[in-house]
Amino acid sequence: MKNTQIFLTHPWKAVCDKHSKVLILGTFPSPASREYGFYYGHSQNIFWLTLACVLELPCPQDKNSKIKFLIDNHIALWDVLRSCEIDGASDESIKNPTPNSFKPLIKNSEISAIFTTGKKATELFAKLCADEVGMEAIYLPSTSPANRASHKKANFLERWKVIKSFLDK
Image 1: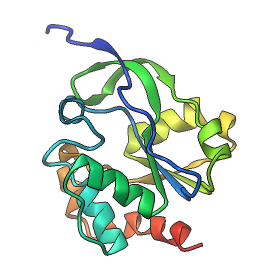
Image 2 (image 1 turned 120 degrees about the horizontal axis):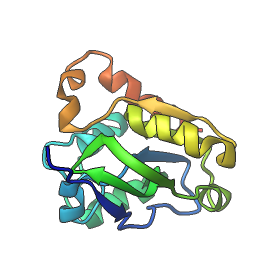
Image 3 (image 1 turned 90 degrees about the horizontal axis):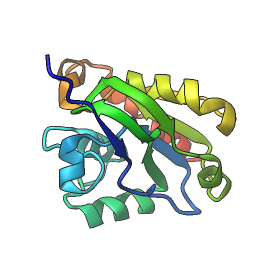
Image 4 (image 1 turned 180 degrees about the horizontal axis):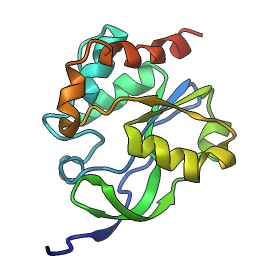
């Protein structure tokens, strides 16, 4: 089997402002997201639809409307990793991870909760970031097309709705 891992550096800054109340973290942008040029850009990833359902708002359709959607709703968005070696979109293939630094982001906002999308993001945040940040992350099931089976479970959307309780504070 050919090793197709490549070393990558995260292509974007966090979406955040001083009014952000929650931070949602993925692991690292997929090839489809990098090609699209923004977070959760795979056409079958249900991140934006899920967040719109949670907030009971129309789903944003393009990069600019997605940024506005996040800022208007006090949601910061980024990824756990600044760089890593990865094979395609496989979180399980990640090697040599380097985390982003979250302290400045949290210091310059109203973030009171951090959510991680998927098991690998949760695991990496706990291992590489939680001590530095002084906060634990709250696990949310992945919206990736690779996690399609869990999207059909009755509690999938309910798990995501916890975000709203932190936004309503």
